[in-house]
Image 1 (cartoon, helix red, strand yellow):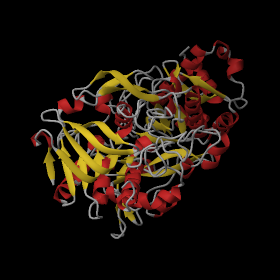
Image 2: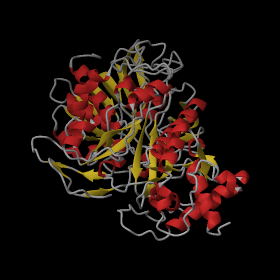
Image 3: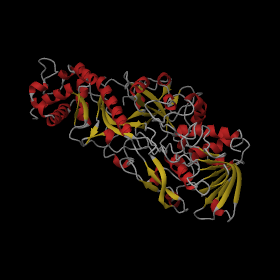
Length: 132
Length: 502
């Protein structure tokens, strides 16, 4: 959690922890590893590898979406899937992704609720980078 | 004054004005509140000041309904509540929030919903409960806490809101209030006392029959009796008292033990695009207000809720979603980090904050969800409880809509992504965790055809028997019940102090 130091009336003295109480999420024995609370930074390492895994899972779950023509549906004309980081091309999809969620054009990829546009983009990246 | 029931000789009869059965949050609150107001109090506790295996075993029973997960496993019934001085406050997490305004209202899309009074009626008692639970000022509104610098509600959208929660230290009632009660001249605390039967003369309870595991049985005679033993043991005793009422006390309409409820917890992995956002508000963070005259809670946190008008228009169950930055290792083929990286790249920033979203949901009142008497008996001879917890199809559908709402809204707003299914099964359809918040089994209603207790918490069909605690909740909301339990206990104590039940 990014800690903003400004505290006009209340000073927050100590971080007590984020285990959300009895029955909330994870048990004492269930925490095999504590997932970090990311704080920002400039490290892109591994992002495209992760996107590739998302794309591959989408391809595996939808046989029709493997056709590039289908995958490009809804993406900006001439959009080129990035193959290395950083990934500025993905910011071009922001409006389409938001519209997908608003209008219910969503898809479950490996259990995650994603917009169709971002799932297709991830699939194209997977194809482009040889993951499939 | 302190009484060790193991030392009482056979044939002992203790006499008092108000006999409170159970020294948990409700019982201790009532005894404290009644002290000094002209009525002698006897507070009976099944156990001692520390946990004891033999006494804990008296809380065992049969779980025959919906699996009740807790930290991923099915806990035995005797571990869900604690049977020694302080009761379940001995393992309470301290999360507090009053029920919301609409929880008290009758909602057309929630059958059997509503309370006999509104939030405004309970507000003064909540204020006192804040002090009892060692919380801060009775404020839960986001605007006020925002003015105190608590952080911004960055996870809000036009369909999702945020509410602040306060955390008690948590107050271990048995430790914090023990000396005060033992020192009180008009309160007797009696340990190791297990009530197994109630004597009736007409509509009056005249005595409680008490069994002591390592001692002789005795009786308590009182003008007023209060059962404060929780949502499982209140109906258990009422159903077991068949000597004068064949169906059990208060059960002439077959309602005792029905409407048993808990708070289902749905656990979803999330990847929040936190870049540029301050998520402090949603973490559990200790507080200290600059104004020393304003009491501060030990900590605050915040839950994501539906905007009230959205919840009403769409008939959503109540829910509060808490973000938790700790999560089990994600070993899936596609991890939270993978999805978070994609979402963050689209949002033009990175990295994401990954973790779990614990969605505490409201269960609809369900007549078929119930506590019955099981076939076995405990060491006192009392039949054990059989808990048949049920979630209806409407509950599951509601859970799915909650998860959909959060997943779609955060996606639309670019705030993050939600994992709605695990291993091919919707989170909403999986075994849910519970809060061990046993509620509803002696529900309050203005009409005795629909309730076990009246709006004053008096058991229908009796003149002087009352119930304190979450058993009386007719509608449950999503918030943790302790603050409301304490508020109702304060309210009932004030009622009895005015001479009710005599």
